[in-house]
Amino acid sequence: MTFIARFAGAALYAALALLAVAAPAAAQPAEPDRQPVTILISIDGFRTDYLDRGITPNLSALAARGASAPMKPSFPTKTFPNHYTLVTGLRPDHHGIVSNNMIDPRRPAVRFSLGDARQALDPFWWDEAEPLWVTAERAGIRTATMFWPGSEAAIRTIRPSDWNRFDENIDERQRVETVLDWMRRPAEIRPRFVAMYFDRIDTDGHHFGPDSAELNAAVAEVDSQIGYLIDGLAALGQQADIIVVSDHGMRAVDAARTIDLDALLAPESYLLVDSGPFAAIEPAAATDRTVYDALLTPHDHMQCWQKDDIPARLEYGTNPRVAEILCLAEPGWTIRRGAPPEEMYGGTHGWDNEDPQMQALFIAAGPRISTTTPVRNLDNVDVYALLAALVGVAPQPNDGDEDALILIAAPEPGTDRPLE
Image 1 (cartoon, rainbow, N blue to C red):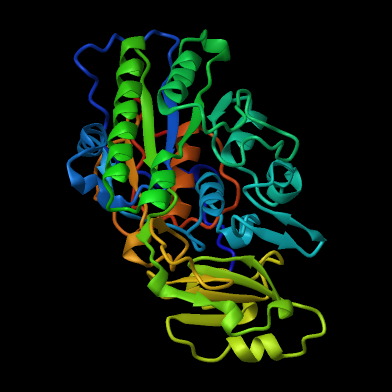
Image 2 (cartoon, rainbow, N blue to C red):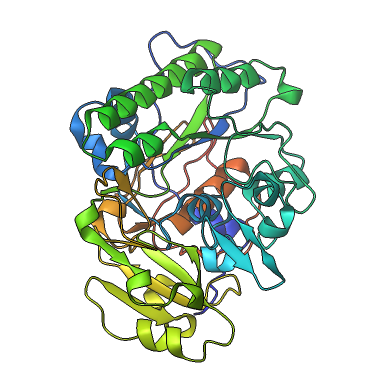
């Protein structure tokens, strides 16, 4: 796998293509000291076709006056890897957050997991890459994050100027109010880049499934709060380039479509680092080739590879944190240890990143963005180019393809020059 570093300095800024946000009728004129702010919004687990359900008037309106396209996530289609990809432009194999659960050979007795705050907040896991807010802060550009995964850690010793410890009890309206409060500040302490995160759609997708009434209610509520944000910005006279993304989609699961690893392997012969739509497996010491021989043969509804043989299209397997064996289930099937419960329902994600139901959301609109070319073949490593251009920083080396978005940077309002 070849590391792609295509953007450098001003060459990056040939990577944008979108339509300006029309100011609401009640909008106030922008104040002289109110530079446009860039707001990146993640809606965890928002499958791209949720936009077609007729319950997202605010997101649909934003897409209509900007640009929208299905977006291919990176593999694995999990939350932490893809959120870090969006703000670094790197594949998980390159930025080091290779899954929601992982181990590192340098710390063999320790496991990174979402449920272990001590590890999730340790810069050791994050320092293999530099997220956009770190680059911006180094350049003297104030940033703020509202629960964006990874932003609580002091990555390369730097945090955003404003950040919050994740608390699922802080609802969507409170999160939006925090961002609007930041926008009410004097110019010298007002952030120019904001990243915010909504988790409710992912949570309800897991609990109830992607086709449930509960999921639809969550989609409608998050859409409502994004509308509240847009109206609040307009009332302040604050122009904003708004980029709305998700990290992955969601698929339904059931007990009839599960693969029990303990039916193939002796339980003591392997360590299961991660499981679900894919399994990350480390053979136990002194097991010879037993685990390899059992897994690396054809199986119904599952394919396994030794890490060096993972298909190149997944761009995964060179990082030391990737487990020795990767097993990937057929879409709709899950891999677990032990028999499933009699009733198994809801949804999950983590399948092949080409699976249509894993595709993510992308919408962008704002005063410094113009639509001149349709967005096609969108890959989430390319979003970093857009963000870096809008924030006004030179990008770090990344895996983005400058031809993938086919986007052109709009001139700043009232000028004939591109963003720089």
